[in-house]
Each structure stands twice: as structure tokens, then as C-alpha cells.
Length: 450
Image (cartoon, rainbow, N blue to C red; front, side, top):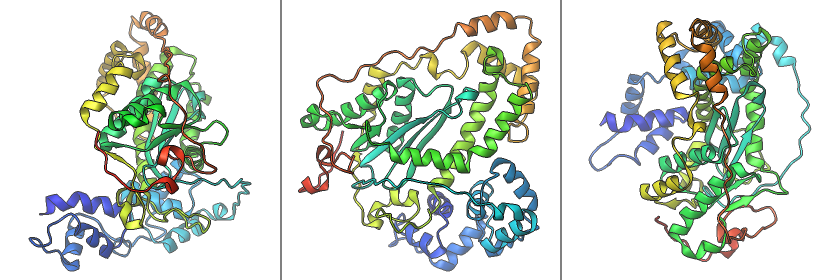
């Protein structure tokens, strides 16, 4: 039935697989003894869903000019390969490499002449398999705008687990909520988590260790987390570097526009609250789109890379197809997640409020008075300025601002579970197999349930 296979078709379509490859994957999800699906029928279904190949769309340098002008404002440094992927994932527009290159040669030849010299230091990173490690890290480059980023990466596949923007990335309860949200979605935890030292990560460390202890009491003497005290947390740093190159330039230029025009001052409490209310949800949607784009895009071939080459999402979800191992701990019960939440997360903590609740309700009423304008790249500052102007007309605003200024977000101290030892450290290997000793110590495989 179409309603059963349509989600799988759309999911695999985003990975830009061929019709034959998608059909082979679809056969894994249907009962082939009861249902038959050949290539001709599949192509008809795909077209009926509005999923058309590059030749069928037939775009030329001229036909993509308008959408390219819009995309250039958001991604000014994107090259031919990157822009092809962005158009496909964000607008379902399939453009050939020759057409895209023709566009740049015709309309933006100066971009093709630009060259960047990057002096990189090669680092070695080993992972035993999928879900051996979840590496987490914060990003502070946007603190000048009072925006804080955080990410979680599965290094073996290169899959981005989450990429969040909020007004803080230092509160352990907030960071733990990102981890638990992902665990609840997937239904399992990795062998170990990994991060730089910092109290903001203590919540994840304790939760990861407790969930493992619920499964295997023999692990009680080891913390199920790797602290990157000397060696850098490589994979998240790579993710942030790619974000700075591929996503940040256009959005940072947009943010700078408001600051330079005097519309937004992070030290002005009222402007800060309105800015968070307008920008954070919109930026989160854009980051979700970026995450989806990266997870479904094949990385450039790297002959020095031993890990599987392919699309991160497919490597992560279909590990066996790449001859790799999956070290996830299945299943983590909802009761176990609830127990950890009760121990370490207060859902009423102010860190989970984008703005104070009473002010949020007031902003929603003001937004309704503006007839709920669409927030996008070209309209976000207009919406912000209109909303701020309307808010300032309220007679009670001085009292509201005074109340907000007393709305401090304190990062409460959180202690690590006592009496635990760090995992063993091996040269180059930072995973959790055999408590950090690696695959050489594994003699058999088992399935786990929490």
C-alpha cells in the first residue's frame, strides 16, 4: 500500500539514491510474498508523488536565476556541489552540475576565481562502529548576538544527532534534555558519550552512566563517558567548522545587519527578549534543514578515511549494508528515561523558557495583532521591528522589563556520580568497547535491553 511505503520513498529520495537503489531498499519494508513492486510501477509512483529527476525538471542557468539570488543571500560561500545539494533539500529542485556551473560562469564568475588556502592539521580518530560514541560540544561564536549553539554527532557515520540554538548552552539540565530527547526518539543509547570537560556536560555523563548501570551492574565502577582532556573533541569541531563555512556566513551577515542598523542591542533587555522570541524558532528551523541536508548528502571521497564512505543517514540506519557493527543498547524503556528526568531535570526551570511565560503570552497577542506575518530570511527583521514597536506602545512595559531583568538563569551546580573510574585510554581510540580497550577485547556479541 502506498501509505506504508511513501515515507520510506521520501526518506530515501532525500539521500539522492537511484530508482534501482530505492526499490531495493523498499523491498526490505514490504512483504514481497504478498506485494509485488517492479521498477516501472515504482517510477510511476515516484512521479505521482511529485519527485522528479534532474532531466525531467530540465533546469537551465536562466531558470534557476531567481531562486539562486535568494539562496545566495543565505549561503554566499556555497560552491557548485554545495548549492546543488541545498536546492535539492530545501526546494526539491534537481539541477545538473553542468547547469549549476553554467550559472556561476554566467552570473557569478568571480566566485569561481576565488581560492582559499586552509592550513589544516590532520588528526586521527578511530571508532569501532555506529553508536560506539556520541560526541557532544557547544559553539559560542554567536554569543555576541546572545545565541548559543549545541550539537551531538555520531562519529562513525558522521550523522548529526542534534543541532540546537537557544539563549544558553551552559546549563546541564538543558544539555541533558537534548540527549534524552534523542534517546527517546531512537530508543537506545550509545556505548559512551564524549565531550570536553565542563559542568554543563555532567547531566549527560550521569544519565548515560545510569542507563548503562540499569542494564549491566558490572559497569558500576566505570563512568560511561570519555573526557577529551588532552585530545580535542575532533568530530564536533569538524561539524562546527563546516557550519561556519557552509551555513554561518549568510545568517551572520543578516544578524549583523540588525545590530549595525541599531535595531538590536543584546544589552537592551526588551530588545533581547523580542529578538529571542522572533529569531530563535526561525533559526532552529533553518538549522534543522541544514542538519537534514548534511545527513542526506554524500561526503567527498577521502582516500585517507577508513570509515565507510556514503550517506551518513544510510550508514547510521543500515549499518549492516556497510559491513559495520552497531553498538547501540536496545531498548531503553520510557520508564528508565522518566527516572533519569526526575533525577536531573526540573521541567519548570527557567532555562527552558525562551522568554518568561507572561511576556511570551503578551508577545503572542501582539503577534496576532500583526496578523501573524511569515518569518523568513527576507522578513525576519521587519517582523522583529514591527513587533518591538507594538510592544513599546504598551503602558506597562517598564514594569515588565524590570520583572524580566530579575529573571536570571542560574546554572545550578551538578555533581558527578561518586566513586566511578574513568574508562581506559587507548592511543587513538576513545570509544566504549571493553571499557575503552577496543574491539580486540571483545570475544562475543550480545543484545541488550534496559
